[in-house]
Image (cartoon, rainbow, N blue to C red; front, side, top):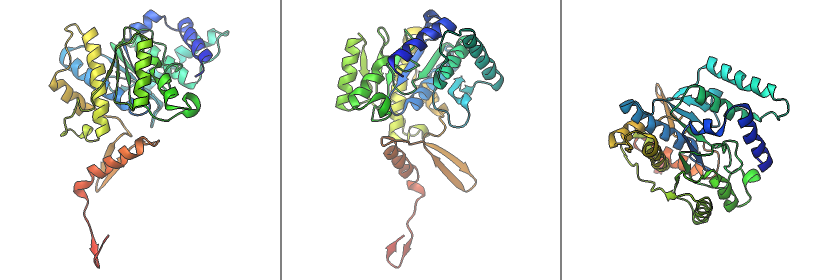
Length: 320
């Protein structure tokens, strides 16, 4: 999104719906990056829900992601449940009616409108924390309207959305790190040197503490969700984000226990990402690998999880 459009959307959001103070009450955890954003957000949600089930806080965990796989309501969830159809329709119309009443303001684009509906939903439903995934970039992304997020996270950055964010990896990194905000700790997965250099520079520029996360912080190899190495990386970043929230907002200021971490991983689910569906005698392996960064991980995951069930067939001295 160009700078001017981003500024208009930011101002329009405040004029139509909510003030910056309202947005601060959402306790947003903001996540950008090229790969693993959705999984990282889902792990963060899962960890916080595990704590909430034990202590009662956070009682409501909101999740906003994109794109959706089957139905649009996947983008807006509370406590791992898609927003109900009637509520979704109600909140869409409430937002749209307010937009219609402001004839002098331009109508939002598709993703902008969905974000407005998500914010409206989370405020009306009184969530304790909202985990929010960027759309494409960061600096001028529609999601970059939260003035004081609790924490920000950057997943691995690569060459994607070149027309909007490129042409170089440095340009893309600059955009992604635009979600950094003073006072909010920032965390990043391991990055290539060029990317890490830009992230450090941007963190210094914005007076933000930046911590690069060890990809094996969460490494329970017996848990199915952590079989793919990249998911261990995503879960490790998510753990840092969840703990950053708890250290700031939880009454006891305590981080997740080992049992809560395990329960969070066991409860983790994210359709279309390293997903197995078993139907009678068939096992389907699903992963929405859509760029060069994703394909090797999907292939390695498939090779690893099918290793035990594979067998060789010999015929006339040749292996079939």
